[in-house]
Image 1 (tube, rainbow, N blue to C red):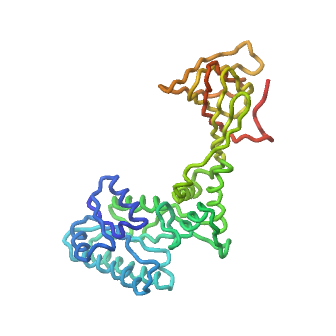
Image 2: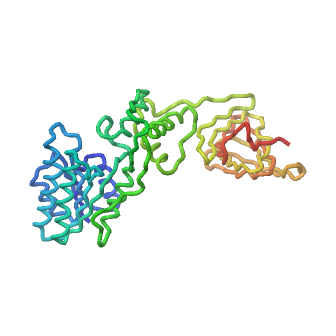
Image 3: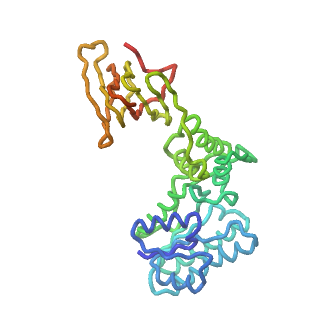
Length: 366
């Protein structure tokens, strides 16, 4: 399908253009630098138009009417004049029901599309979008998420006028998925929705972004699902280049070192375990906790036996030289240990199904 995207260099537009190309669509681009004649030419050539272009914070208030309403009217007129059936997907706003210049201009644009749908065979859909967030959104413009991510990533102070104020958010990739899916609708409804929409407060939003920032110190990554997962991906995209890397404190001891990298709520923790030459680590068992050991380098002996039955010990020699890696599922109820029998440090990557807690360690010696 040949798809014209207006506002193609904007926040949503860039994401949509990439997604359409990945799916094999031919994409025509229209933005501020293009002319009206180019717009009309591309509308005639296109099978579908994703109309994202708009003004939401212009210097001249008249731009609301000229762009949001006027440009939409131009597009609808060109579709009427075409002899080809077209699809038109329009990015409107939840503010279309509000009596402000931006909302009124979006409402008028919707009316143009509604008339086009009623009077022609064009397949039209209107998406009333709440606050859209995600990577690539401009800070200090019209997104509190972008602004706060930018500021917190740089250690700057944020301002919250009312922590209890409610806000509805939708993730940019969910918006893009909804637009792409709508292109395949045989009989699309006029009003379409993007889901999921996340309801929160400004205070909760500020706290969530700060959790993302603090994770480098606490190693506690926010829950990787829903709003938390998408906010973490968004926050990381606003890190300045010099802050992309950070050091992890090494906890050294005579047998080597243990370095916790990540804690994931309800998903355990990931660590690097270094075993010095001719030293042994482990020497305990778990009742429920599951661990995976991935041997990255070194020459080791892994031992395990049912708790209370050392006569049933099993051993496995593991040599990791970079040609392949060995992973071991540590069996609950089994004593286990790793001995480094080589002359260089042995390194293992460990995933544990539970975060370690002094109160509930689930780690016991024989």
